[in-house]
Image (cartoon, rainbow, N blue to C red; front, side, top):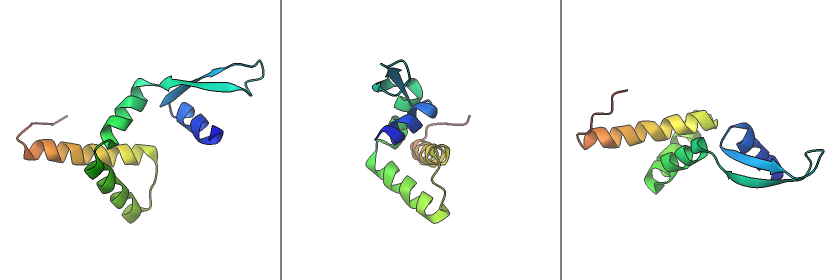
Length: 87
């Protein structure tokens, strides 16, 4: 658990507070804005299934790729609803 949470902190998705002088003891503090944005992208079960399926096909499991895949499906859904999502 510690290793994975440290990865979330390094990616800027969460923050941690260190409670010892040597940084060996820490507590999870909160998700960052970026962490909340990422969770919002993959919260919908259909988007998450699509994202995982696309990642299985490509073999690429990076966080950045996951977000891009999820965002592309979200934009496609919005486009099919008549919402202009050009960036």
